[in-house]
Image (cartoon, rainbow, N blue to C red; front, top):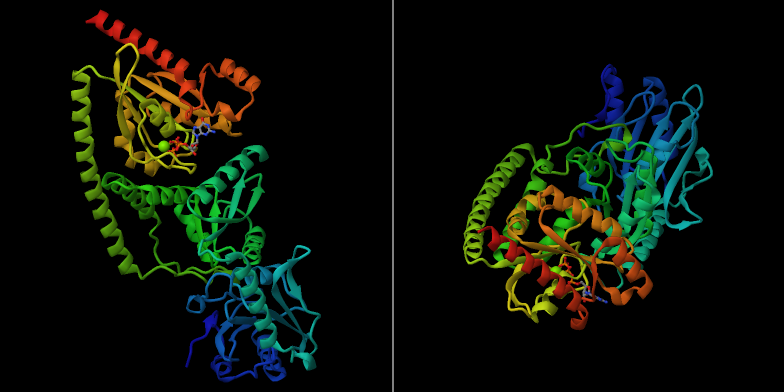
Length: 549
Ligand SMILES: Nc1nc2c(ncn2[C@@H]2O[C@H](COP(=O)(O)OP(=O)(O)OP(=O)(O)O)[C@@H](O)[C@H]2O)c(=O)[nH]1
Ligand SMILES: [Mg+2]
């Protein structure tokens, strides 16, 4: 006999047996529920003063019998019924309401979060006789923003609603929505969401950048959602109602993934993925993903792996058995407890091996640097926000061929070139990984070797893409990272790049305001003033340092 789910404490043996016997009942395919079954659970529910719920599959078999309390039921873990994104669960939920209340907000939330075929509530008279059945389902296409269809209350003789036909037509429509979006690509489609207390302007700018990041990593963007709140919900970031809207929007837009602009802490990601049946990642994970795609050299791959594992470790979670009301049930998607322990240990071991390998790299780098400084070579490092044009500048300056592309984080591995200035000063110029707002700390740690390289620079060229509408925020982010890395004492030239994309007056105004040199990194002739400025500065430095010797 299958077991009952929920609160059976204090029931009489006969009542428990009657509940267990419900598993034997079968439904003809077209009825939402039969009159007899609805009548029987109403009476039993009235007798025990607790809600009773049934989860019924599409063959009309009762998959779960749930006993709740006066107020509600808790749906158990239905993960064995999980289906692919963009499809319904294959289970409908029919439960009793002890009062005469139609579908509640919570019922609809569960309908959406669990992607049930149908959610129905049976209402009863004061003496426990079946009164009506209230049923609702998710609308595949948003008609005037309405996410659900709620049927007129069904009377006991109207329960033959062509249930399976209805579900099938919903599935067909959902499949259609999905295929519309999938077209010919196998790309993930993401809904981007920001839940924040900052100003709308700041939040939108950040979302726009998240969109660039998503596109850059090969994800299609299905839509963006901004939720401004006075206070951020510590567990789910947003309220249940909003989470529900999000899931429905994801279904309607054919999204397979949700990306949060905020970093989710381990317990938030657990709470949210326990509630909803879609892949959820945050900004940090997206950036880590891009880095993983871009890493080409052995060293780069080691660093990215280290960053990814450090991010993953605290998020390897133990099995979640706690279930909140109806909604809880999708928990326990991870492997069993012991397996998790093994995984954790493995990850820790791998992390320490990676750290060892990388500290060796750091040592070698240090030696190289020492050699260089012995030879008195001057080092210029090009830094700046990702996509600002750093590699392009290096290429044009040194006529070399470092990968420059219109996507974020094109460069992960630093490259150095020699450069001879007109006055015969020879310098080494290095290109490095791009910066970004809220650069994940795991990446800062993993890329320490790269960033340490910057410590030995004599001069930093901060490349700024003045054609980017968010360039002011970007300058701020870069300068913050420089300060965090203790690099703000090194001489720095602001290089205002992509001046060809901005009108002249603005370029002049910005040059004045920001105190930099404007260039087009891809046009050699525009670099002359910058080269002169570098040369003067370096000449000055050399002169000064030799004066001190
Ligand atoms: N119009 C214009 N485009 C430029 C200029 N400089 C660079 N670009 C373009 O901007 C894009 C990014 O250039 P990259 O040199 O790869 O930028 P990066 O700073 O090295 O980027 P990451 O390595 O990703 O951090 C490329 O498509 C370049 O062709 C410029 O002066 N004018
Ligand atoms: Mg680059």
